Structure formats: structure tokens, C-alpha cells
Amino acid sequence: MAYYPKSQITTNLYTNGGEFTRIDNNEIYRGYYWKNSSNKYYSGKTPTDTPSIELIESPKPKQLKPTDVTYTEGPAELNPSPEWLVNYRGLTKSSPGNLPQKSQTIPTKNDYELGEFQRYFTKKRNQNSYFEISKEDYTLLQTKNNKIQYQLYLPIILSWVISGDKNEVYNTNKNIVKLTEKRLKLPGFTQYFKDNFTQYCQEDLDYTN
Image (tube, rainbow, N blue to C red; front, side):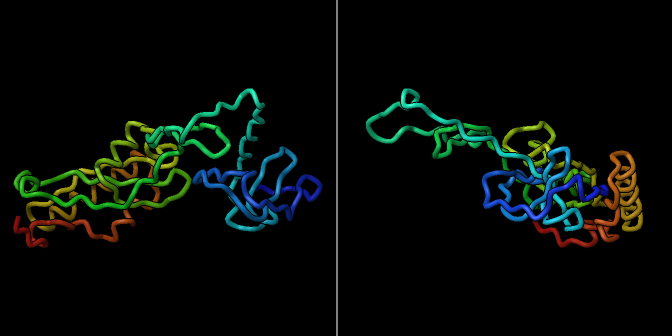
């Protein structure tokens, strides 16, 4: 966080919720915040409070006139699709989408015959945080589908060797991860695997399917 002279910041402000949205996860923010001279808002009482998350002002609700209200007999039918939501004020806005979920892809018998399979991971764009996801979530992120928060997460795909000499499997998978880390600029991605580059290797797994 940059240094701000006291004359350029206002501290110890508080919101009960509804005024701001966190930029990292699109959730409504409630608690202390401060602002700088550029009218940018951050969580915490002062700039020294961590973590300091930038806050975005929530849009002001539209003031409806009596002529804007339509009365119907019985409940109105809502759009059930996840791309849209209707709040109680009658305003319609785009949904931020779901978060990618942790999930492991297990190799099949055909994968072992082939000798490798695809694994899918993601990284939060503003953090060096990684976890494994499903092929479905990877595809949604890769295609920037509104059903998922693709703006916040980077999709990663790896070819993972699972058959052959154990030492060769270890070295091949480690090199694949290191090259992916370098190509996509993923700090700490190699360390994420904790040196377990023979995971799912045919010698390690009792595959009975």
C-alpha cells in the first residue's frame, strides 16, 4: 500500500453494508474503511490495517415513480437462469457468477493405457494461490463464461504422465510444471505440488477399474 500524508486520507469510517463491494470477490462489504484524496476506498480503519482491500461504491437504487410500478394478480414469474437475479427493489442486474470449486480429476483405465491425462488448476489473479478444479470449471474459465467468476481466476491445464519408469515420470512431470510456471508466470506453482510428481503413477496406485 502506498504512503499517504494524513492530509490526503480520511480514516475510521464505517459502513453497515450496501454502500461498497469488495473488488476481490464482489461481496458486499460491512465494517471500517478509509478513503484517499482520489476518492478511492479501502477496507480497514487506516492504510496500515491489513489486508487492505479496495472497495467499489455500490450503485444507488433507482427511485421508482408510481407510474413505473405494474401490478399483477399473483406472483410474477422470475427468470431462473444463474446469469440474472432480481432483488426486492425491482432492479435487475448481472450475477457475478459462481466461484470455481476444488476438484480432482482421477485417471481412467484408458488414461493409463495412453500413459497420461489432463489435470486442471486455477490461480487467483491477485494472489499466488492455486488449487485443482474440474474440467467443467476449467472450460468455463477458459471460455470466459458468465456462470463463473473468470475475471478473478486464471485457468491452467497440465498433461500429467502416469505410466512408465517412476524416475522418468517424476522428472517429466516436474519439468512440465516448471515450464508451465515459467510460460504463464505462475510464482510458486512448482512448490504447490510438494514434490509429489509421481501422483497417480501406475506403480503407486492400485487401479482396479
